[in-house]
Amino acid sequence: MTVPLALLGLLEREPSHGYDLKRDYDTFFGRGRPLPFGQVYSTLGRLARDGKVTGQSEPGDGPDRKRYAITPLGRQEVATWLTEPVAAEPYLQTVLFTKVVLALMLGRDAAGYLDAQRATHMRRMRELTEVKRGGSLTDALLADHAMFHLEADLRWIDVTQARLGALAEMVRAS
Amino acid sequence: MIVEAREVSRSYGSTVALREANLSVAAGEVVAIMGPSGSGKSTLLHCLAGIFTPDSGEVWFDGRRLDTLDDGRRSELRRTAFGFVFQFGQLVPELTAADNVMLPLLLGRTRRKHAERRAAEWLERLELADLGGRRTGELSGGQAQRVAIARALVTRPRVVFADEPTGALDTLTGEHVMDLLVGLAREEGATVIVVTHDARVAACADREVVVRDGRVFDPYATGAMR
View (tube, one colour):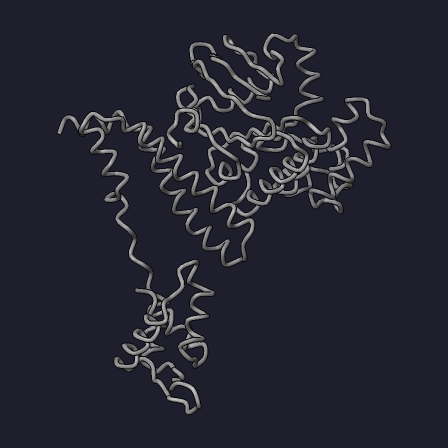
């Protein structure tokens, strides 16, 4: 749900055409997943319908071009969004926890699963470390964000591994 | 394999630190040894480096049995073929950065002029050219660790052993120190074995093993990552 707000934010910087918005979005936020043109224009259409942007047609020889500008309502929405923290994820409901509990419940190798998961996480950490070495500052900061989340998972894997015996007793007793 | 532990066990009194631990490291590899506190990872590093002798099992370096060498020959090997970086640098605080870097060369009877030149080169590679005359007790944690890296690499070791080299540093400083350690070791063709509990540090390595309750789990050897 960040695409409309990211486009609004880019428009708060300066009025722009859809093409320029897409280019800026891809540069700052795309990270290998460019925003389709169709989504840019459909999003701008909805923002215009809701009174958050205005689109001014510009005459010319080519196809009809619109220059979009943010409205006071759109500005207010961006301001609110930028001050609201994102809800914390309920990590204990994640697939990792479910797999460990189910493995213990079914008498499978939960420790082996955690070891394999740690190795998979570490492989991703190495890939992101490479991205940081060769990339721009924005690449590095985005990789850092992903790495800190992976680190949180890795700490959870270590703590769970250390408590696996107690967790197994609890799961089997219930 | 340049470094190998075969079925290595080691105890401190009644506490078992390593239980038949196995690890093989190829020349030029960068390997991280991970694990919780007290898991035995530092004991494994010390056994591999010939600082501790195992109670049982074998340690090999470059085709030679290390654990059966006498103390004198092991010390010589540590001075000539190995470099060490520890968590708190273990530099001599009263000496300057340049003197600390020169120390292993002078102990190996390198002429002082030559040692001075080599130390200056290494301090420059570690971005410390202006700090050679500064006492290491006056340096920041990150600067001191860079001096420790220069000291570890100045003898052109075959293997660098690092024990929690960024443990006392913040994230960005630690990252810079690891980049320098791994980057320069690779340039020199040195093998690096680094003990760490920090996933970011381990991510600078080619692969990691985990020590748990004195046993080594190697996801690449067991096929978990094939």
